[in-house]
Amino acid sequence: MADGAYVITVRGIAGPWVRGVFDDTEVSVAGDTTVLRCAGADQAALHGLLRRIEHLGLELLDVHQESEGPA
Image (tube, rainbow, N blue to C red; front, side, top):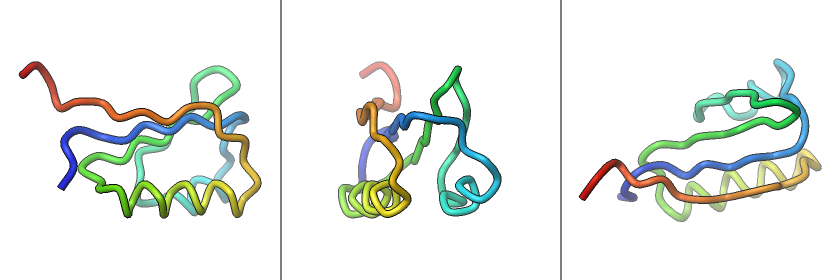
């Protein structure tokens, strides 16, 4: 099990259809980007999210892992 959450930023604003594809993640919009946040995901889940992004033709801007909090 992973610590924290993976945070993925893609270019553009996700509409209802794209949000439906990522119904297992927290989806938010920040300016002209969409942020996907997947808490507790492991590397396999991250790769699955990245494959969905690729299949949709979304432009990946950033991927990073947030920690759960101060150690």
